[in-house]
Length: 99
Image (tube, one colour):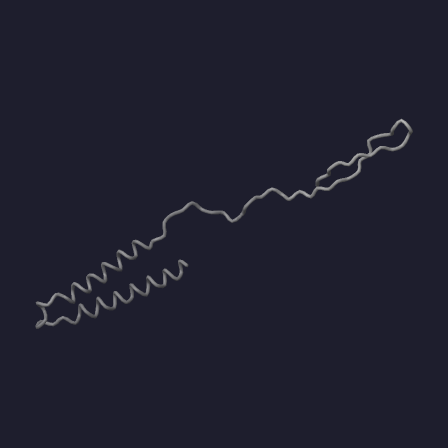
């Protein structure tokens, strides 16, 4: 986006400079009293300067591309040995295990 804006600004400045130089050199002694061309050229140059000042990028804090997120935990239910009952049989209970 900024490259397109920079190219457009450079193109506009080049046109304004070309117009200012062509209109400034076209005045002869017979047309010295007519100042419309000078006002037009001055307006183009002033517009180019003001346009350049307004399109200048504004400073912003640097944005870093790395985003740290919590790792995804994978959890599952698993039987865990808890001991023997009064008959001597193994006892298990389900517990949640996460890696």
